[in-house]
Length: 311
Image (cartoon, rainbow, N blue to C red):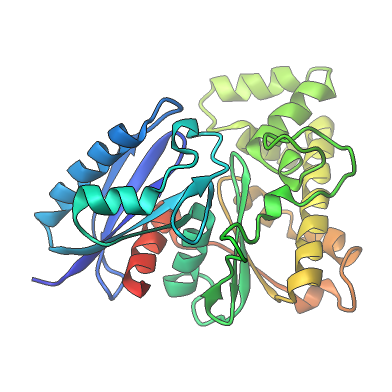
């Protein structure tokens, strides 16, 4: 029986698990609910159940965990507001002792980047920046085929780069972070503060079954709603400035955009490129490839499994 590697993508509402072999074939998947009350004990028990189920499919060599937070090189979790009971926990060591198999842990966006570089849009690209646009703004930087983690493991938190001095309050506690302008939560704030009937139009479409504020807002903008277009244009401009600033610092020429907001942004690629062009140093926007992420909803789990394979 072929040996396999398990990957867990831990978020504030659920964790996604995938069983993957060394050829990137996905052998099994599971989704388990999480929440703000999730404890280390409950998470460990749930992951243990998944590992037991996966072991019936193929023997598990190691487990990789991607988690929505900053992870130090020794696997300790910090900066995870959606999973407050896990802050400060040595996730990798605890799970390794609990499960009895090797465990490694990293930031979820880093794992997504690993997946895109393995089998996704950036396969074969030695250096690229992945940006995930969802509830927040995550990022993973790959340089010379290695994920850049920085001195402590907190490297490439693009969402918390300050782009507006004394700007909007971000969930991290700082003001003016890119995430405060480009994320699902940012869109909700923009709609709320816009006034007028925009909020009513958004709520109406949400009641009809739309998946989120971002999907609704981009849809309204596509339908030439002036208020929605104004909010979308601000978001795209801020993202363009943020991406250009990252390119100026890291000198990467490939950007991969993932997450629920990415399709709307990709539809407005000319506007994004114009915003980037105004902020790039010593190059024009046409020197940068902007690609949609292609590894799908299991990307974080597959990347976490790949992390286990590489460790």
